Picture 1: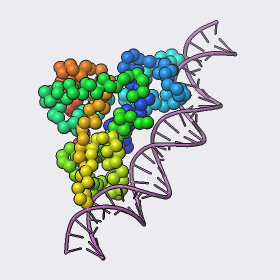
Picture 2: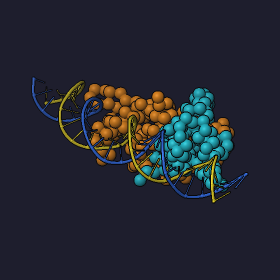
Picture 3: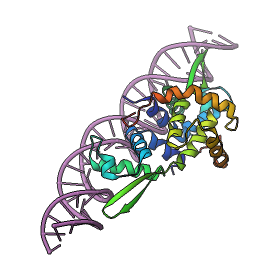
Picture 4: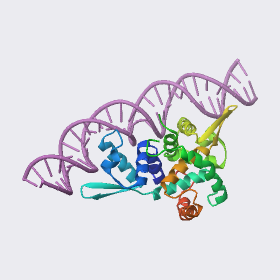
Length: 117
Length: 117
DNA sequence: CGCATATTCAACCATTCAGTTGACGATCCC
DNA sequence: GGGATCGTCAACTGAATGGTTGAATATGCG
């Protein structure tokens, strides 16, 4: 019985799925539009999207022939808080947290969406 | 060529490994001590520890016969910042972030260390 | 030295995962 | 109705994962 954290982290462990999430950060997209930049079959992308849905990282809504994919960032928060608890600073200590953010925003810049990360 | 985010998230996707990390949050431990609460072979735990080392989530240092495992939370930060960027709030907006933490600390309480999560 | 402890290695097994291809069900539109 | 498009399903493959057991390697100690 995989827990929520299991599925969320497993979903995030794949670079294709992380790319999809960053693409959806910009806008909602249809399944074929999501698949377009990748060199892999539509079926493969469809499977990736199912993984993201089951991790509750996205939702899908069928309108007519097409299915729209929408980022659902709430599921990230449990995982994010879990990770912060390992970061060994008190999440309520915002001073420590501000220091953490200052040092870590450099690292973020090194991450370049929408390509594979 | 798996990237850092690949290995970090993959490492976090396993509940045994997350349990190990929370145990190490309390104190450094030897390999056999880490293995003790789990119902699985020492070799299995040794493999899990290797995964955590390769994700740079822990370090190991051999002193005499025993090998000490130490939490290395820095590797979490890249991943954590990546997740925050998906959370759609500006990490520098601490007001928004404080609101986020208030609502999410409940969720954290539902996570009970040191058992399997 | 010789034994016990600590950890890893090697080989193996079952399961899951990421991808493919081809067929199929919906839906839109002429 | 009939053709084109959108998306999933089913079956398959190869590789990775999580676990086992038994042997091997270090190291500490009497």
